[in-house]
Image 1: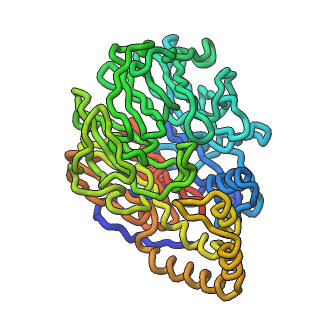
Image 2: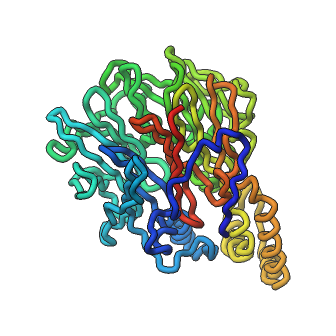
Image 3: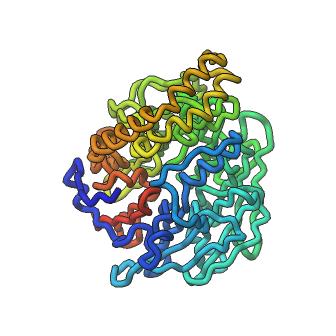
Length: 498
């Protein structure tokens, strides 16, 4: 599994330096380090960069799917920890680099906290500066937020909010705004604001007004820009972008800017957002590669992400994207041809998420999630997985295919043959050897938002880095890059001033 090469596709990748000698941070306990899969959140305070991790994400997702199906989906050995520990952690790094990584928080098991999805530094009107870390608690629908004023002592706040997590927080007109989310899929529009999360708590923003004048769907994104608050929401027919008509969010005083997934219903989530050269850029995603946010569809074919941009007059245009998989007719604009000339996912169907967008200097960086490296470990398990899924197809049908008892019995017999499993094991090894130079996330950059240059197309030389989960610019004008790596543990890289 270990791979040390640094095969990149642009000289620009050489400007990045890895600052995690041990993947997953933990020098003492390799099993614990490996379970720090994602750099799920990142923020700075004082002399330190703080990272909130996500634990055993693929492993947890398989367990969740197994519960839904009522049958246990097998876990590849490469993704199975020796001793499972799902308790999220927070680590910090001295910006000077003279100290190693230091763990400053470990979630207690009873909190059912698998990691910290977002972290924000915020100063109250009374002058108190603190870090706020929003957790994901799959078994506890009470939104957990931790607070720290010194970076070493963390304690939970009683948010009083029903929700499993939050993906974004932003400061707007002196207040901190946040959207509460369901565990998976779509939920209510729950937008909260606070001037002091500990002293005054959170206030629900009322959007339960007239249809067409208020956001709908759970809130994935929040952005403060040009004296307006923007939110990105999930809908069955594709994501939506809304903005306030005034400076503050008020009921019946919102404008719909983008709807129906910008022309493709498979653009379910708006999962990244950034302002660059007077445009708002929004990157899309499917719920979980092939699992849809639409409760009526469940499993859908994979597709690459799309990227759009919105100008100061609320006009949107396609930057990256091909022919829509499920065409829609947006009321807010026309899909058109991609300005960049690139189809969805930059032409790579495994680029399922545009996970991060971050301006840095005079360039905009884009980081993806690419699932291709997951193919080899799951190939040998295909007979076991199909043994579970085939009866479901026989009962319910899929894509107009109705499998009868005889067909099911024949297929099960074929799958049970030892030579089939052996063949798949050889095939998995072959695919891994064939793909190790191109597996891993993509990192792209642009100077004008239209013409893009690939910085790396293989996880900065590590094919097991399947996603860029964080791009963060510090006050010292350094770009920090945090990876998602469910095989070995996450990595952090840094690039100096532009």
